[in-house]
Length: 188
Image (cartoon, rainbow, N blue to C red):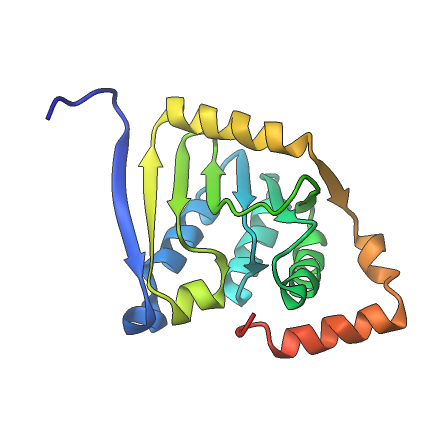
């Protein structure tokens, strides 16, 4: 096989057999904690555990541009309420969350500093990091990182930024839906 380009790649797999020390969680934490300029995430299921939530908030607090795209139209109603609740949890330190309004976004990607990329089957939730067998490819390439950053920015054109005030102004019924959804976050 002829090699083309200079991209370096590694497969990272995780599942219930390694739930306590899931390599994909470690991958996500390593990428986020080492980010210098930017962290861009696509995830249809954005329900991070405390360690990932803290890593995103700390990255934004230290000046990293952290942006997350989640679907405006999810495939499960519980997921929608969990997504916006989790989004609210990370927005306090400057994490920006965008709702993709052109259908259901199912991308599971992360681009860090336009050079380090993660693409695979793992969502940003406990189901992927504890219950399911998943595999991501981590790619180190400025060329691919630039292409993925450009694709992320193109998707932003079809997004609306989700603001903290929107969550804070949920109706009573919507707040009940969020509370009930959070109880079942790992089942959604």
